[in-house]
Length: 480
Image 1: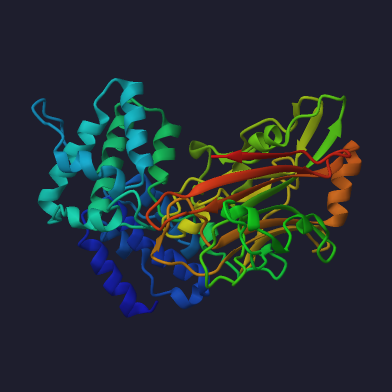
Image 2: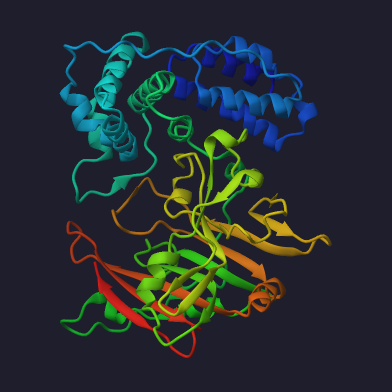
């Protein structure tokens, strides 16, 4: 970005009438500070940018706080937030909104709108639709169902990833404006309001700094399938050139404590993946003979425990990795299932943004260390990973993800060519286990998929295993 580009961007922002588009316009300026020396950006005038802001929201306010910090200047004043128009008793939701709101926006927006309506007893969805209709008049946006048909079409079509049109941003900004109005009126609490408002930003800024890598050489890969036996399902011929279980072995003095993603096809990534897996390590102690099934353990560890941020407590809501002081555990540290006492090592993150710009990173929730582990240590961001180091600079934990390109469309219910993994130094893992007298076990959930015809649905089977848990390996095959 240079002075001319900045001037053009400011002029473009000044012409916008939707809060979410204005926020998107600010993001390239923040990105410039992330990749360039601040002294080379002296031409960026934060006050001039503030004077160009025609509409405001709490998301824009937080982005300006970020800009002011990066530019080492005081945050300028911004215009007052636009109120939502008063809802007329005679207003009825148009058919276009009813038909297409769940496809022009992620369905979670409508789900949250309904939840607010049920909790408050006020017609949030109707007011949201009314606000969008009122905003159409001054934006010049035309409601065009063809955009939606291109996106959704029918249940057997491949689906379009990460779509956002002008209509999408109109509905998103209207949602945000009504949300602000409900918060002003005291109908929803501050944390719920900020949680829903911050979700309208399409990317977490700290995750934006990390580029996805390519597939590691040790990532699980299928072998060429054997000759199918007549009458048998296609998945019975699945075999591995590189086994998932091999991930439980050390790699260069490091232990993988969590890995997840698509399994590489036998012919490489020129073929779309069909199968995927989740492998999660945990410390454990057996206190009796009542051992849980692999499914019982997987049901807990697949997405729990979690790490969250309380929106009202943080001043950096879009910097999950760099905001560790405000992380909070969503569940207890230790859980007992039957006579198996589990000490989680891995947790799932829940940052506040919806990953529209890096939708592959939102396909599965990212891994992180469980809350009590290394939480006093800062998170260091590198080109393709984040890491935590000890006082000597030795890496104790690191996280990476990989991506093998993206297509515009994918079949429903199949994995994207993406994966993630969390590694700890073997010495640190041993310290964790020895401290509490634990052993290291894993739960492995492998999802196999097949599709009989191009127009038919995808059949999915899950195999769940416990690995290195006592002297047993429990396996359950489930048809979904």
